[in-house]
Length: 241
Image (cartoon, rainbow, N blue to C red; front, side):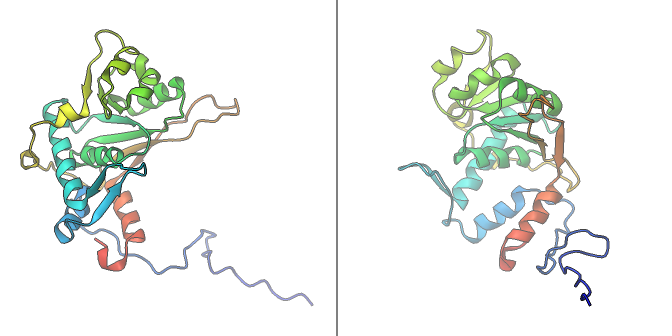
């Protein structure tokens, strides 16, 4: 006689997969932004290393340096690049210290970021920009040819403006990141009202390369609550929000 099947503890009665880990407390502060936990870490351990480029001799940032540069970048995006909370910004760049720094700066403004894979084709990037209604592109000179047809203002994370200009229309607006933040102080930052239900990022669904669906199928909104809840799941209990 066959024995009765033992229910899998990972699944609830409704068939939904459930983690065997204990529930993590989620954020209760409805006005918490994604940069708030970062600022708390900077206060608690300012000299601790938080980001490092993998390349030999690459740039490193402590929590204090990250927060300072993050807020400075947020100030310049608003005051010099004209970014508003209702705008979306495309980040198209390889992994580097400046990538998460720019992402956090965008969220510090209450603005929306949308990130694209550098391997995307110009057509796929154009579709994502259209879905997200992006108003500005943050990228590197080697990827400028992929966004040349967008006719959007560009912020270059590297300093090769000459190479970038060769791929852009003569009237294109190109700003070097180093020039953008020059002379600006983090104390000029003013935290905007932010709600946990706001859209913080728009993630594009990966395009199909099979020929069935020639482009991505839209942009998935991610809220500060979504990211803060994930932080609570991953962070050690002592460091949870």
